[in-house]
Length: 204
Image 1 (cartoon, helix red, strand yellow):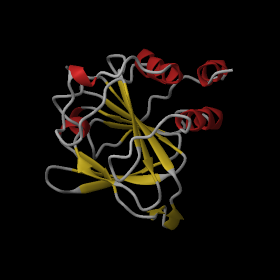
Image 2 (cartoon, one colour):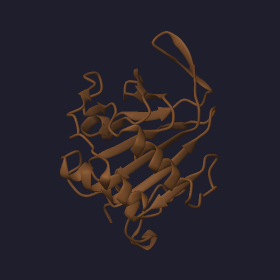
Image 3 (spheres, one colour):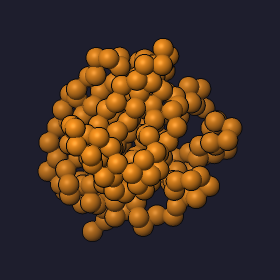
């Protein structure tokens, strides 16, 4: 049985509306977006695929390959349609209205403890007005930085989804601090291996 079939057979509840973070306009956070069985299936499928090691962290590109150095994407970077094991997720995101158009580009990022990603805004000319990120394997802190340099921290729980639209998409930078643990609810929490899947609609 393929991972795609397993995902379809799982009895998944409808997506919740998500919790807006009023201090970051356009940001929504959905805990428990997927269940543990789906998380396990996705991690197994991801670990069967080849990794790109050009960066400090390992990545996988689907749909289109993003050029990190040029911060650009082009028709020549097209890799083909998304693999079958990703389609239940992309279809659900679109059908439930979390993104206006069916995502056609997915980046898988692996973060081992101590790794992070610097503050950035996803390429404005490359991708549409909605960015979606699904966390697997470990909780961590995502930091949002306003144009005024004020910051807001959000705990990304494993299996949660983050939706970036509006100011959260175009004005606020987001980052993952590079460290081995986070302070969550007053307690030091060690990170473990974390996988993120970022879903986007390409504009080329």
